Image 1: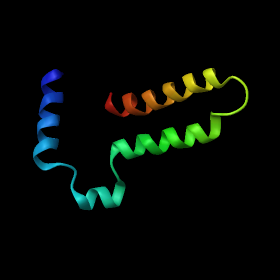
Image 2 (image 1 turned 90 degrees about the horizontal axis):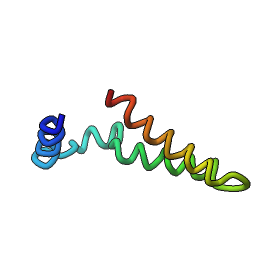
Image 3 (image 1 turned 90 degrees about the vertical axis):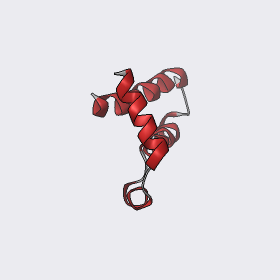
Length: 69
């Protein structure tokens, strides 16, 4: 597993994320940023902010882990 991650990092360093792909679909990091922004706007107010923050972390982690699995 660690070898696959190192290979992915090496490929990303060598060829990067192609501009045409980025313009069409963005980058996974920007997707995560948009998700965090949307959840922050929707949940970061009122009562139970700590619980809502935990929910945000859970949703963002699941959004990354489920496709990776």
